[in-house]
Amino acid sequence: MTQAEDPKADAALDALLSQAAHDVEAAPDHWVDRVVADAAAWQPDPAAGQVAAPGFMAQVADFLGGWTGMGGLATACAAGLFFGLTQPELVTPTLGIVDAGQEDLFDLAQDALLPDDMLFFEEG
Amino acid sequence: MNNLALPDDTRSDDALLAQYVAGDRHAARHLTERLGPRLISYCRRLLGDAAEAEDVAQEAMLRLWKMAPGWQPGAAKLSTWVFRVATNLCTDRLRKRRGVGLDEIAEPMDDRPGAEAQLLTQERQDALQTGLAQLPLRQRQAVILRHIEGLANPEIAAILEISTEAVESLTARGKRALAVALSPRKEELGL
Image (tube, rainbow over all chains, first blue to last red; front, side, top):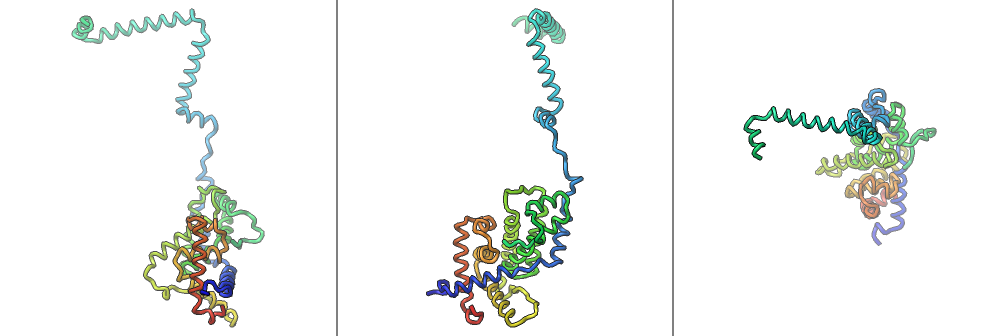
């Protein structure tokens, strides 16, 4: 029988370990003071360190690209509602203006081009 | 693990840490007095030096204060986290100390008045410390955590970052090796 398999020795070792388990002293005062000083040095300042959590609308605005993005989205929604609810005959003049606007833009572009460029366009 | 906190202090470790983060200065002292004794004892058993054990235990607590604002209550056990940090710090110290003979490692001091029975008890504990110091580091850690700190295998596994099966194997082999290490002094120590 080896030492490790001796039940008597095993029981004695258990008793020794058990004694060690109970042999725990309070932490020395000087050690506690040092640790508490560390804790004070690293303690967060609730007044300075905490930032209030953003509200629900602010989180939504942030998700959609900030308040500028929210403004654009509102404009697009209003335009969509306008075109959706307006009668077609009321919209036609608007489209006419758009068409006229496109012709005006074409005339402006013609003025801006050099004569050689215009020749190229006319020859195809 | 034995709870050495004040008897009327029923707040959990997590609650104390949360109160510390919220600005309660007394919470840090309560937590220090609760965790300190076992932490120092564990480090002293691993390192065999009281002053060095206090330094390491203080460093482990310092890391606790630093990470306190980010602590997730319930994600892990606070004492397990601190013991894991202390284990790693002790391991680093022992690796740096490599080459120092076992005889050069100081044994725990005891300046209490010595009746004969107390002396015998102290001799036994010194022998235990010497025996523990002869074990391979992982076996030593596992034996101390299991048989002296009284932790359960899953918690030891979390501290040592190994499986519970590995903990069982380490503690069994460690205890056998400890018995062998103490056998030459069996009669002398009344074992």
